[in-house]
Structures are given as structure tokens and as C-alpha cells.
Amino acid sequence: MMVLTVFWFTFFCGYSGQKWNLEVGYQAYNALYTALPILWITTFDRDVSDATSRRLPQLYHLGIRRTYFSMWVAARWLFQAIYESAFISLICI
Image (cartoon, rainbow, N blue to C red; front, top):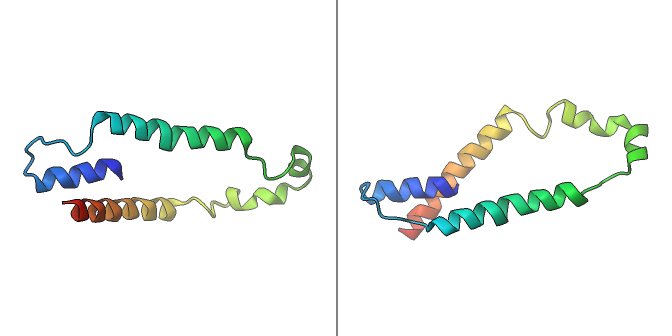
């Protein structure tokens, strides 16, 4: 979404080369808002113990059947990002 807001801003500025965000903003966004939460969750997340997950393999059948992540879910995320970036850019301009 952050890249799409720059696209909309560039379109409305007539491709003049004016900057919307500073490069530090991109670096901070990538480091703080994407990398750190993923590292934190993968390190400390544990919903069931190892013994329980071995005893109850049916806990994971929704993941195997792609209930939570499919082509339609990814497409919905894509269209939502396009919509939100256009909305944010139009409000700020």
C-alpha cells in the first residue's frame, strides 16, 4: 500500500519527480512495521504444546485445505490495498 500511494501521488503531480515520502520513511516502515512483528510472533507464538500438536493432527486440517489462504483471499488483499492507497492519496492531496 505504501508504494501505491506514491503511484497515485505521482499520477496527480504529472510525473514531476516530487517526492511524497522520504527514503528514511521506507526504511523505517520495512524495518519496524514488517520485520519486527514477524520476528516477535515467530519467536514467541505457541498456541498448543508440541505434545498436543503430535496427538491432535486434526488441528491443522484447515491449513492443509487452504481455508485461510487461497487465491481469492490474496486477490481480496490486493484489491483492498489498491482501494486504501487511492483513498489515502486522494484525502492527502
